[in-house]
Amino acid sequence: MRDLLSDARVRAANLQAEVRTFYEDKMPNSLKQKSAHHQVLDKAEYVSWMKLLDAQSWAIGHWPKEYGGQNWTLLERFAFEDQLARLACPWVIPFGVKYVGPVIYTFGTEEQKNRFLPSISSTDDFWAQGYSEPGAGSDLASLRTEAILDGDAYVVNGQKVWTTYAQWADWLFCIVKTTREAQAQKAISFLLIDMKSPGVTVKAIPTMDGYHHVNEVWLENVRVPTSNLVGAEGEGWTYAKFLLKNERTAGAIVGMAWHALDRLKTLAQENNSAVNQRIGELELRFLALEQGAYHAVESMMLGTDNGTEASFIKLRGTELYQDIAEALIDSLGLAGIAYDKDALHVGAAPPLGPEDAGGIIKEHLYNRAATIFGGASEIQRNIVAKGVLGL
Image (cartoon, rainbow, N blue to C red; front, top):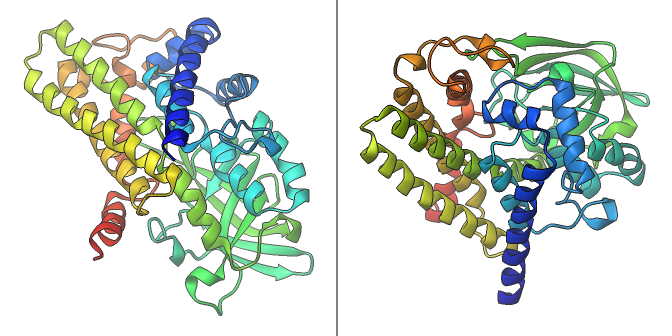
């Protein structure tokens, strides 16, 4: 086991070195600049970014080799995302390659694998996640969207909410109730829904950063072929939990905190801000997060985890990132309140402060929700209390 861990650490370090070389030599300068300034990317830019990763065999590096991946260990996958985030690279859009892809190759039919996996790898199909609903956010088991069997199709009615980039999506993976009779968790199934289907309506939800991230998705008598049911009917809760574990172990959380802290140090030095004690406290918290997260990932890889590691990473990482973002805003001074969303686009400078002031404010505003989406901090604490303390 020690040899396995040692080998994984070497491979993870080598992968991070490859990412740094890729960033210097192959990543387009225009994309570097937009991402470093936290400016907004459109769908075409995100798809181009994902295809660039796919060309390096990285977009699905964590997939098994039989499905085109490199069979990365969990440590390699975590280290890869961590390094990208430290370099301020764009977000690795997770909905296809990290979420639904592994569900399909783990639980789907051969027909589903052949049909969906290639276009997920290439991002020729853009996916969105249909989990949360009004009244069913962290408590997903209380969802109300129904899929009633009618011949060779399910008829789906309901509403999903906070659906990131649904306005761009070709497909929606969705948890739905396929029976009213069974216990809540046994009533849930996992469906793949074509967003071009009649009855699918997407409505934008404004967020306080002024950018279109999230949406409501209304499903009104949407017919979904039974061939788009993943796995067995009534087993969707198992697949949903499998997916959520992938969501909460994102190495980008650590990398984002590092990048924001590094920017805070530079900004404080430029402005001669007297925030050394605050930075010191944040840095100590970061070092604890970094050490704890990598240790947790290694435990998960070796099977010695207690089931709470993903919650720990999500909980500590998002809360630290929010606190660093607040310190960044404070260090901007007056520029921290002069927010003009036009500064999130190329060629438009913020009204005050450094070039990336608009992006710093955007990140702060949007990531106020980071301790809610992906499982609220209160839920993560309950999971840790139950797993570690037995409460």
